[in-house]
Image (tube, rainbow, N blue to C red; front, side, top):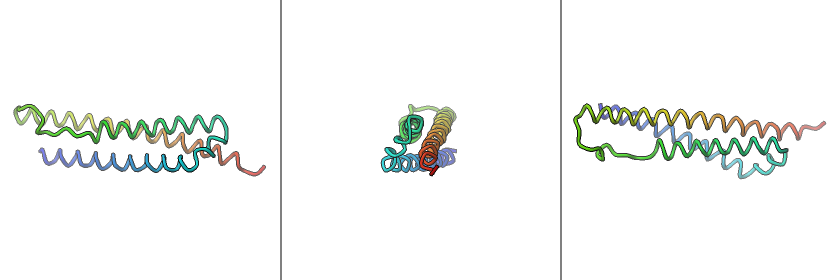
Length: 126
């Protein structure tokens, strides 16, 4: 049972790493083109900023909530059943945090893309 749970924690960690990779790409792209996007107007700048806040919040949830390590050997001695229930509760909590982080990332990326769309639309020849 504990091996199966360890595998589930590995899956959560792997997916969180993917989420963090997307965050890193977003931050890198913003550092290269964020000023141009913000120059497209106030709405583009607000969407860009709001998107980045959500994307970085997503990273924070992943790092502090999902990837944070608490060893099962740190648990107070208890019965096997109690230990399994405790680990299941941790898994469920991390799964909920992953869902919240994923929602924040998708919303943040959506706002980011909307700001890019505004910039691109503003550069269409008239």
